[in-house]
Amino acid sequence: MKDKPLITIITVTYNAENTIERTLRSVEEQTYPRIEHVIIDGCSSDHTLSHIQRYVERNGGKSHLIRVVREQDNGLYDAMNKGIQQATGDYLVFLNAGDRLHEVNTIEQIADLSNWRRDSANYAVLYGETDLVDGEGNFLRHRRLQTPEKLSSKSFRSGMLVCHQSFYVRTSLAKATPYDLRYRYSADYDWCIRIMQRAEKRRLRFLNTGLILTDYLSEGLTTKNHHSSLMERLRLMIHHYGWPTAIAEHLWFVVRAIIKR
Image (cartoon, rainbow, N blue to C red; front, side, top):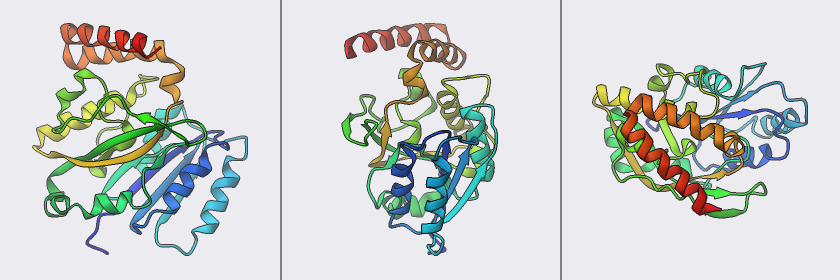
């Protein structure tokens, strides 16, 4: 198994006792052994840590690694930067409380892609599709924004076409590209764009796995602060793509939000 990639899964938690168990079980049940699970807890005051401790105890003799960091942070994206700093795998992905890997063999399927094994040195990002689930983990729908067959930094002009939790990044690239803490709601959108821009400068490629990779809890920070998120997203689109593209695409975001109601 040493020739197989080590995949780091980063889980950021804070008072997540109602959803964290689903995420921990999802990682625990993976058939692929070369997994490093980094858990960053922002000093939860509920029973989150108890769930994490039981998870560590259950998996003490198993092959995948678990690293838990419990300390104060300056918000979600600061905690995610802490997770990146802790990661030692070849690739990393974020799977936060309430999210889960789509199948018990999701990571194994990624690692077994023949073209991924042959050309792994050339891939900056591995990506796939996402399903949305509710607070109980029940399927809601496929994500409306579909992943492009061929991904580039320009793809995100139309929004975040790849869900953050289905965006596996080469760890060395992630360490060189921390989240920008000036953004409160959309630093993940900015981060993905900058990851792709940096990769393109180095002539690294992006691999579409063709798989549904993640069941994503559709009740996150961005969902709860939809208006503020849209305004911050507009600022980021202007920064990365210019005024004309940003205004046109942002108007479509508003129309789409109205249609969804």
